[in-house]
Image (tube, rainbow, N blue to C red; front, side):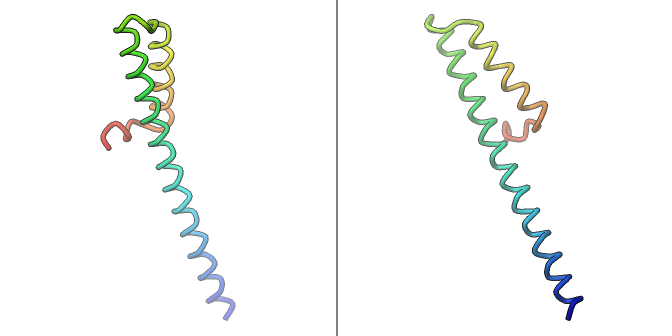
Length: 77
């Protein structure tokens, strides 16, 4: 009986870990999409004359840092 409970506990833990990984992936994708949107807004504002090159560069740097940490998979989704 103890062997069965140990296997069940292991399967539950594995399921929880997979769920957490999926949640982390979704959150990273959403954050990447938000950063990409911010970059687009900063670039558009700069081109329209109401933004600054510095704001565009900051948005680009934030996006590049996210890509370096989480990869660029959100760009293909």
